[in-house]
Image (cartoon, rainbow, N blue to C red; front, top):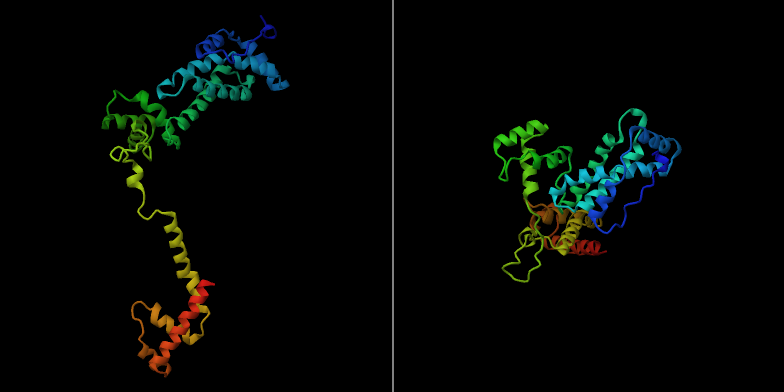
Length: 283
């Protein structure tokens, strides 16, 4: 039977995952010559029917690979769906002239899509972001002996095998076997409603407080500079000497002696200057 006479039914809406798996297992496995012909037609002529046959003939591979990731607690059907996306990417990039069968080339793309799906959906908080963390995430379960915590020897051997730091192994174990905790409790019971939000919230975390602090900071810097600039030199010096010299503020008598005027006159100049500054700050 040649590839031109093969008619593949599309395994969609088959009612259940078991029916789907039975359907894809009935698709014939392509010979090397058939695979090369189809891949060449797709690559050179953009023959979508050839691409379809390449994909359908390898769907059983996706089912097999996805089954190996059931231990992460995600639905088998979802894993298969993501793996199928990887298979289609592999078919699109496959070059039959390199002498490698599609099954070998597609494994990488199928696993890559499944890995990405698991990392995004396994926990609310992503557990692996760097290359080393991803490597640990997908090897820690299989390399770990028993269900207890890792011993120092296991940690050292695992770090050497995967070429990562021992601290990375310890951190990933904590991430993998820890549990997601709701920030806020759904319980109305005071005793059962003690959630992290109760003790993680900052005492000064109210948005209104942040706005008020921001306004005060602005007035203390830009606003004060603008208000001082509105004064004449003598008034500015009196205000700065009286109110902005925290270490050694000047007295009314000291400023009176400096300017050759009475202390009462200094007080009047100061009061008038403060009023003018207040008006400048409000404007």
